[in-house]
Amino acid sequence: MMLEVTNLAKSYGDVPAIADLTFGVAAQEFVCIVGPSGCGKTTLLKCLSGLLEPSRGTAVLDGTTVDGPPETLALVFQEYSRSLLPWKTVLDNVLLPLRAKGLDKAEQRRLAMESLAEVGLADFTHAYPWQLSGGMQQRVAIARALAYQPKVLLMDEPFASVDAQTRAELEDLILKVRRHFGITVVLVTHDIDEAVYLADRVVVLTKRPTKVAEVIDIDLPDDRDQVTTRESPEFAHLRGQVARLIVGAQPGDADTTNVGVAS
Amino acid sequence: MTAAPTVEPAGTPTASTAPRPSVRRRRGGGRLLPLATTVGILVVAELVLRSGVLGSEFPAVSSVVAALITEVSNAAFWDRLYQTVQSWLIGFSLAAIIALPLGLLLASTRFLFRSTRLIIDFLRPIPPLAILPLAVLLLGSGTSMKVWLVAFSAVWPMLFQTIYGAHDVDGVARDTARSYGLGRAQIYRHVVIPGALPYIATGVRLAATIALVVTIATELIVGSAGLGYRINQVRYGGDMTTMYALILVAGLLGWLSTAASRALEKRLLFWHPSQRQAGGGQ
Ligand SMILES: Nc1ncnc2c1ncn2[C@@H]1O[C@H](COP(=O)(O)OP(=O)(O)O)[C@@H](O)[C@H]1O
Ligand SMILES: [Mg+2]
Image 1: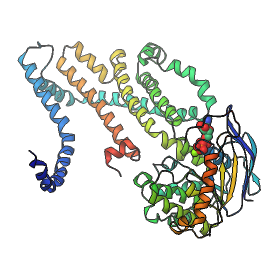
Image 2 (image 1 turned 120 degrees about the vertical axis):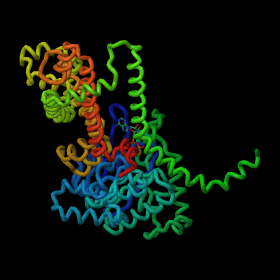
Image 3 (image 1 turned 135 degrees about the horizontal axis):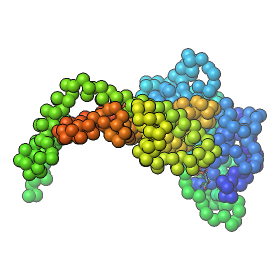
Image 4 (image 1 turned 90 degrees about the vertical axis):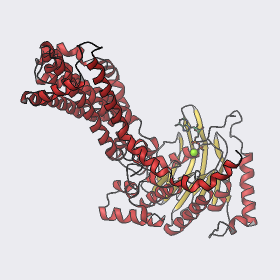
């Protein structure tokens, strides 16, 4: 396993956000995590990326317990416009994570240019993020993560705030990138179709206090297509299966009735 | 009446070309309007003052300008101006050198921020001129007293704005840098300082204005060399016209200070939403 989450729990003060999560992600696997708003998906990714310390349990990345931001993992935040630094050009934003890596300047630049080319932004290196559309900003954030050369890429609802067309493009981009670099991807989404379209496996979470409701294998062919994959009966069947779980998702504790606000 | 709307589409080509010149006119008006208003007010003031309804206390605008020309052709004027500007800038720079790093330091850890809060909250509201007698006692009435008093007054806005700015830096940006393994110093350099800059710039602009006020007030009260002292001197001499001319010079200094700060902000904060709208993107 590339990533192993064991009995992970996280409370904010006395409020339990994540009750008990156990699941694994194999090397080069694409796992989507779906769950109701406020069930702790962002919290989970922050624990996996070492930004938050779990209250209980562990996350083990490539054999090492996570206890701070790991060098082999990159996180793409949901709020891309706040995650990109407006005072830096696109290129400087992508160069940012390479500053801690101790590479020479030429190598840093090569990596940054390569990742920008990968996401189709080679011509926008000297633009500022705020001059770009939302979809392009998210591409910059993805390029920045790729330049870091992670083994595992975590993405928090990365396509939630772009239009449908851009969203489809970005979904296919991330599938291409994953194939190209052979990285492991864990992507959080609240969109069931998106989860089934992208994933090898879908981890469905319950409402708070959060547990794993079920893990569903998505045995669709590997090269997916926005039209043919989505119209196949297997796709419809799988999305129905996930949807039923989400609708029926019950809290792990019966006395917790409040559902947190969406982030 | 009902025919009018159906006619309008035919007029749209002209309507679509119309906005351009009107936008240009508005941009030109951006500079012209304040200038025209100022000239208008000066002309009205001149007429009212010349008519004598306000008595002879207030000199006419034209006599103030004449007095200003006389004053500036005197070498002593430039010496005094130099004294004022020098104290102002040195005091202000001292304050900046103290306030900006100290603000960043205090904002960096909750412990430092909490433990210094009480003493800062106590010192800040002290009006600089209230400690003027103390400053004179300790440092005399010369330039160094003036400089330190100016520095004391200018430290606070810069210190507070720096602390607020550093605290208000976007958590997502900070987390991003942290998740990519950037160290504390790197996070400060790439995220916190640029992120706090809009606040710091406001602090700097306010501090520069306050520093000028305190410089001139100190000269007026204590009689340290400079414009403020000269204002008092001509007042004692009964030369009201020159007094107004000198007040005008002080006003010009303040205006220059604000204009310089704004120009600097425009350059440094080109990425900030406030500047983006004004500058139309860069
Ligand atoms: N910093 C925080 N302090 C206190 N409560 C928080 C904090 N962040 C998130 N929460 C709470 O924890 C729960 C999970 O939040 P989050 O991980 O953002 O959920 P999701 O990403 O699934 O929408 C929510 O109820 C939220 O209100
Ligand atoms: Mg979230």
